[in-house]
Image 1 (spheres, rainbow over the protein chains, first blue to last red):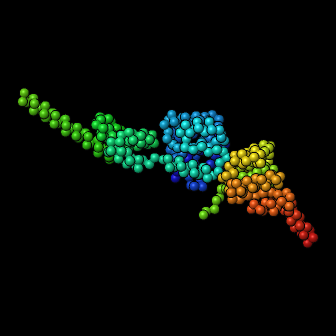
Image 2 (image 1 turned 90 degrees about the horizontal axis):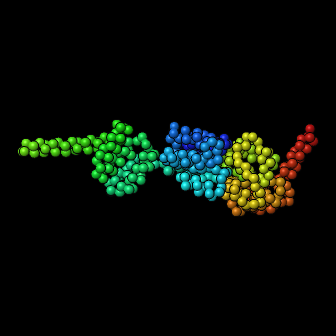
Length: 222
Length: 142
């Protein structure tokens, strides 16, 4: 079940957003300012954040900045009484998905939550797509998606595996090994990385044996 | 289609009636926005009221836009002025196609005017009259 974080210093606003989300069976946690929100975001993975702007302590603008600095890719929507274009534009520049002005309707909250869900990166689907891009030598496009995958799934072995695959295709064997080892250490049971790493190391071993043999033969001849 | 349980309702006029109705509706779980030109009027709202309040003149369309009248499921025109209530009802019904509009009317002569634009009406004088009639019959019947 999708879970959202609601950040607002007014209890009644928090409850109104929570209630609207509950109607579409989305769960939510609530906090009263930016500091509490960051703490919650470090502790738990959310499908989206609804944040107010004017709050005591860390306000919404600073929360958006902090989320960007921490490379958090959780989708975020501002819910604020501010209606001036300057502030709205500023928020969009900080990467928000939508800006809802107060008073808001339950439908506005529900629609924004659904949009945030759509923004979630499906790791399996994206990984398949990135693999295709690598096979077609479209490295630029692959890197763009890889960056999102690394940011969204830092503890998954998949982004490192794909990175290894990309470097291997580019001919940078050492870099590929480094990423495949990282992938393997994140999840020893992840077969694709394990298999590819073994293949590379076996091939390297064979090469070394062949060149050692050649060196030996050359030595004997001399 | 499933019945909407959380309606977005705008109450124009935060006098004794408007504030009472706004409080009841918000207690029932609806999203309520109250508009009144006097900020002091919001003191009538109960502590349990969990909606929004907007200071604004309902005769100015900007105040209604600020309340997001275009998204309202219901508009209640509850000021103490029939003309203002008519204007708000007309804007809601004819400009924004608000599904449900209810107006309070002081002068029963104005009822046909409101009915013409398909607005439901509450007429305190007639309510009092029928209430009195019932009470009178109870007394006589004793």
